[in-house]
Figure 1 (cartoon, rainbow, N blue to C red):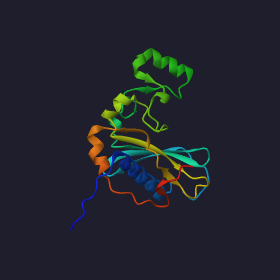
Figure 2: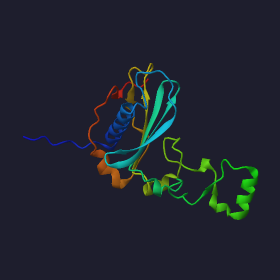
Figure 3: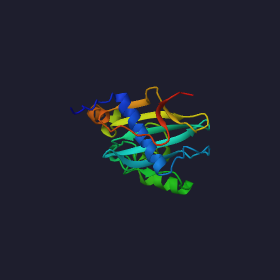
Figure 4: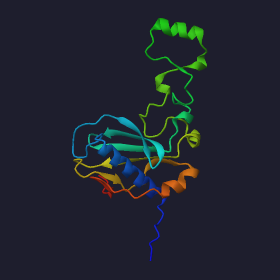
Length: 191
């Protein structure tokens, strides 16, 4: 008798997606789960289950990592990405006062932007307005990777925080393969 694989809930799909993302970061040595060393806030563009994705991470309070995944992400449709809605914009950062004045004379205000207005992957969710997400990202989810000494890191059992799921990506999310954690637990005590 063959076993029918049970479909995951959306929450379970997000937890497994976050687990796969953490495995990738560990495999690429971007995060060391056995080290107390500080890590820089970073991001990684990669493919997760045939979908372009961004993984972001940063250390919080010396021991916790805020881990986020933007799955099925299309930066060319992101309204505030330099390869998307801002591809024809002129960045103002790094210009001298004279260059800035000259540029303002030759262009319209709508053509100019500051780097702070563009997507830089420094937050757990895209900086665009949430009602625009449907145009460029399928799933966003975040969690705390916790551990008092970072010897036993866990993904919080609490529902993935600050999440978004596009209706057309629900089925794919609940069907992703189970994560086999490498050096951490998917569920554990919240410290």
